[in-house]
Amino acid sequence: MSTVATAETTYSRHRESSWGESGLALATDQTENLETALLACAKGDRQGLRLIFDLEGGRLVAVAQRILRRRELAEEVVQEAFIRIWTHAHQFAPGRGSARGWIYAVVRNRALNMLRDGKREDLVSDEQLETLRDAEQMDEIMSAWHRLDRDSRLRKCLGGLEEVRRRGILMAYVGGFTHGEIAGKLKIPLGTAKSWIRRGLTSLRECMA
Amino acid sequence: MTIARDDFAAVADEYVLGLLDEADAAKVETQIEHDTALAEAVATARERYLPLDTGIEPVSITPSLWNAIEARLTDRQPPSIAEVSPRRPAAGNDNGGSGWRAAAISAMAASLILAGGLIWSVTRTVEPLVVAVLVNEAGEVQAVVEDFGNDTANIRLLTDFAVPADKTMQVWTLPSREMGPMSLGLLQESHSAKLSGSTLPRPQDTQLYEITLEQAGGSPTGRPTGPILAKGFAKLAR
Image (cartoon, rainbow over all chains, first blue to last red; front, side, top):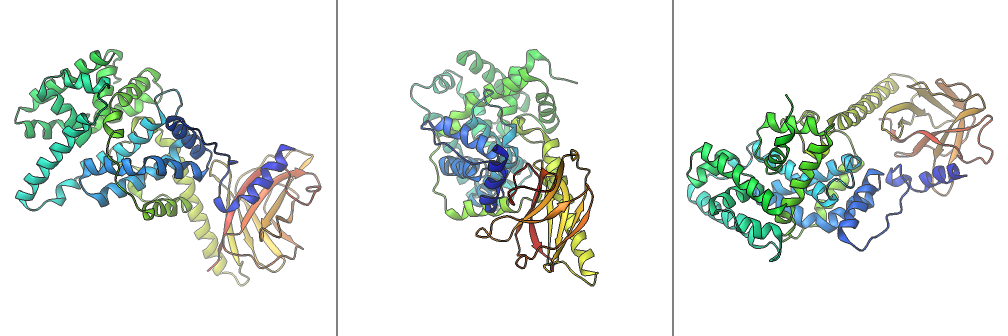
């Protein structure tokens, strides 16, 4: 008689226009929570998306803002990302990376797309202001490394890199800079920037393996 | 040209850092769909750098952000053409663009059919009060219901349903929660039909319509008991 339940459930839940039956169990662990939430999204349960928003929303906006530097653009990105999380949750494969990593990747990707579409360039008109903002952003980028757990492997391995390589890697990941922008900021030739970063990434992989 | 296995780790790192140019990023995203080893390399790289993001100080967010997100969920139409063909391909983990595209196309098809239904409805003398586009679980448009609010409703099937000999398709609506689901009638054969005879309250905007598969002769309980073939919400014909 399970079909009865299915049809009746649908009627009782019709306002949520959801196909799946609900029942989002609250796990205690956050990682588990996010995975459960993502799987709930895949079933069409909005509570899942809401949970992701409640758990990570503030950080996701902050991550997007660190890349785009403007709050309203960051919020736009997070909005788009949540729609994408909702429509693509079924593509998350548990066991291949964490739900958290998947969710952050969606936001990062949207933010980078918007950045590369040139929105960030539009925002500064005053050159002095730009210099100031640049300095602020560089501080923010480096602080992402300082904020890592004292015992974290990533923190130690980044610390083991030559400064310029560490800086290049952090500028790319944290600030969303391209090879060209990194070369410009560090005042080194493009080819040099590329090969330093590449070597830095290799050392980091070896260090963390 | 595929990415060589020896380069997976290096390419995955640069992909996750956002350092690949458009063409190379697209290559990763295409290959990742069928290449588990590359997908795993990307997942590993992602986890490696993730703490740089998760350690960030969260900003305080207002409920309006959630409201904006939720408003766009209700109305899951493609937000823009740009989303259908992104300039830069999407992230590795959600690279199955075809699924999205299918959803977008069916959503657009639904809008078109709805629009078509509305146009058609306003050019006729007898007008339905509401039109509902019914979709299946995959979001594909299956049927359109026009409820005239007197005692007739038109069901136009837009796909071929395989109905076993001992089964029949039954059309339902939910005038109100108190009233519960009410039968609009049976589809004797798997094609479009005009149903009449049921006297129900005037159909409302966002009223639910549904087709289920029931035993021949219709549901024995007067409530839907079988699997849902398609469902959708009504829109007032304007």
